Image (cartoon, rainbow, N blue to C red; front, side, top):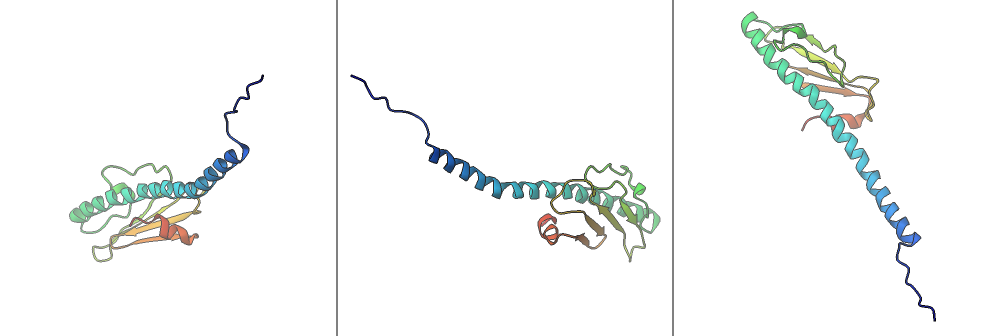
Amino acid sequence: MRVKRQSRGFTLIELLVVVLIIGILAAVGVPQYFKVVEKGRVAEAVAYVGTLRRAQDRYCLFKGAYGSDANIMDTGVPNFKYFSNAASVVGGSPTTGWTVTITRNAGAPTNYGAYTVTFNSLTMVFSSNSANAVNDLLPQ
């Protein structure tokens, strides 16, 4: 007499359900991951501007006007990894303030396309071809 062994394993339907669930989670999670990564890259520019703001304040204190060159920073201009290294700094009088423009590297992979972040001593302007970039990437 033969004893019937019960097979242990997964059916094809169970495997398909697991693959479907993983696919749905990946479809939701991957765009959020890229958004968070790009936000971190924008933080690089924001950190640079904070350092530049302090350097401009010191420069204005001693010279009576804001500097027009990024080399006014006593720490030196950082080498950006994700933005163009030619940060354009425009100085002015204490009433007009100063402006710096930082552009995202065009060749770098980004879901938001190329964008530019412009800071001045009063406001921050963020321009992009993608409307989602403004809402997704700006610090809150």
